[in-house]
Amino acid sequence: MKRWRSTYSVLALCLMVAASAWMGAACARGPSAEELAAMEAARQQAIADSLRAVRAEEEARLAAEEEARRLAEEEARLAAEEEARRLAEEEARRAAEALHMEMMSLATIYFDYDMSNVREDQRSALDENARKLREYQSEDMVVVEGHCDERGTIEYNLALGEQRAQAVKTYLVDAGVADGRIETVSFGEEQPAVMGGDESAWAQNRRAELKRK
Image 1: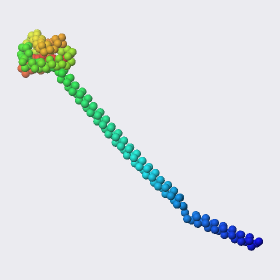
Image 2: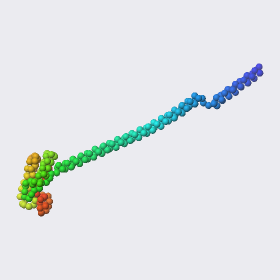
Image 3: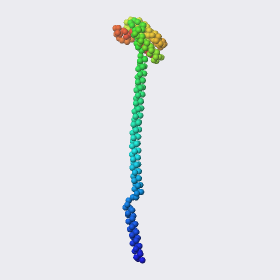
Image 4: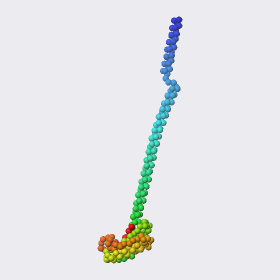
């Protein structure tokens, strides 16, 4: 009986040693093919995820740059349009002011010594005055002022100045300007345009000035 027990003990010990050896061998040989495949798949997935993230970041950067460029171009376009509009408005304003000044300006008409008839060389200026009065702010009143040089008496020059103003008014009415728009006044020799006692001064003082009211 003791012999069988000894034999059993020996067999049990051998089985334990064999089991330990088998388990050690299994641990020593490393991961299985399935495990290696799973690890490789995980590595490849990580690489793919990283590449996707890099591509997404680059695409986002390019999209942001493109949007910034588009916004800059749009801002530049709007600024250019605004500047062009401002320049056009400024040009139109200047043109309107120039036209206004031109149309409001009425030429002075000059007369010969001691005469009140409209000289031939003054008719074109009067025609232009009539056109401006007809075509621009046609509701405006206009005053025709008659003036003389210093020669002659005060009374005579007042009368001569009135005759000159009336001659201009008659010309304007004949040219289509309403009679009711035109007033006349004489200043005689009291308001000379040029000071002086020779013909060069007198020639500029024998005149009729037209002024809008």
